[in-house]
Image (cartoon, rainbow, N blue to C red; front, side, top):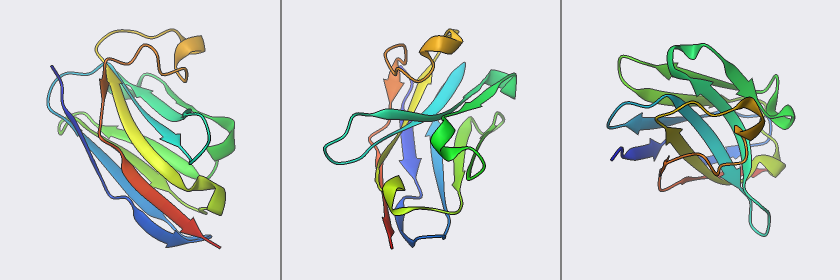
Amino acid sequence: QVQLVESGGGSAQAGGSLRLSCAASGYTYAMAWFRQAPGKEREGVGVVASGQDYTFYNDFVKGRFTISKDSAKNTLYLQMDSLKPEDTGMYYCAANEKYIPRGRLFTGIDYQYWGQGTQVTVSS
């Protein structure tokens, strides 16, 4: 059983930055960030595979968010720049021990472990 602990959420002005962290207690193959705004469905933000063999982003964050993983610390990061009010929501870290096909990376259904979430609020 792998535990995921997120940190780094908070409030920012539009155009500002925040950095999220997710520490995993054990081995993970793929780690990802998802988010869910009030009244909306959960959506994938970005995912990175073990060793960073691949990194994918959802289109709405390309060029603004950067996902990275420190394998030595087993920690996933999400650097969020040029924040917009529509980035407001609960951000969740997710992880899986096995390979996930590319077409399913942002569905969320293959991830075995989830963090408790961290709130991000962006004001205009």
